[in-house]
Length: 81
Image (cartoon, helix red, strand yellow):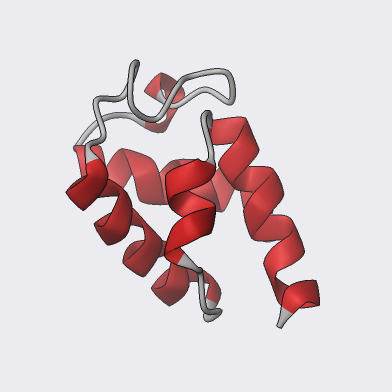
């Protein structure tokens, strides 16, 4: 069985940050706990676009507070397009 959306999002974040996926928990804040700044968030959006082969609007990535919020947003993107 393949990875879930949550596992894939966590893997992309972990690879971007150079940390283990275990360090990327759903409750962690992208900006406060994981130290993403606005440029990092834009780059993360690009990485997620490549991973999921969808267009990820900048507003979605920049408006999500936690890893879990981002997972939920990614799950609904295909239905928005």
